[in-house]
Length: 258
Image (tube, rainbow, N blue to C red; front, top):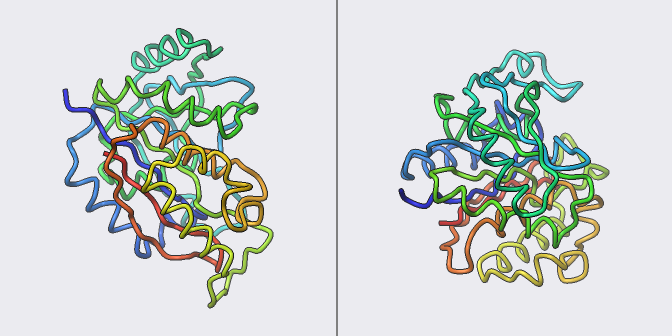
């Protein structure tokens, strides 16, 4: 079976579900040229648990885990099937590597999962599982968790790490017309570091990157990038999927590792 690629996708705000911008069509075009995955595993910062949990529902519900957004967003559904058997296999894989992993048979897919999936696989006909981010996850641990997931790629599972390349909601400006210089600088740095597979720099982003702490006051939306890079190999070909800058500070830039 062909080894499946890994995506890091910046999912931005929930409004991305209805505002595709530059990145939405590009995600669709990119997924269309790839082999059809047997299943998709999503890691999103919107599900954080004490230890790794894996969704094991046969029909995971679409979670609208946000508030204060336009009403049409709450009617959107992504009715992809789950795959409980694969969930058990993933738990066994993680436990064999020392993780205290377990399944959750009731958890649905949060917007960090279903919003980008609406563009990547709009038919919602591929089984989707979600892996939670452990609360203790730091930058080195995120990379290691990605490495632990590598065997899934040989089983036809596409790994989708969903986060945000920049994520300072303290500076969110709904009607921003100018992109923040610090966000653009961090975006340029991240692109170069990802392209050269610079593990040390990506892990040490708070010190190595320009404006690292301003771009990510909290680490949760950055860590999925490290999961994706860890799940890829050092020889992976990286495709930059250019997006716009939402609200002046949310970079939608994403990456494909093949």
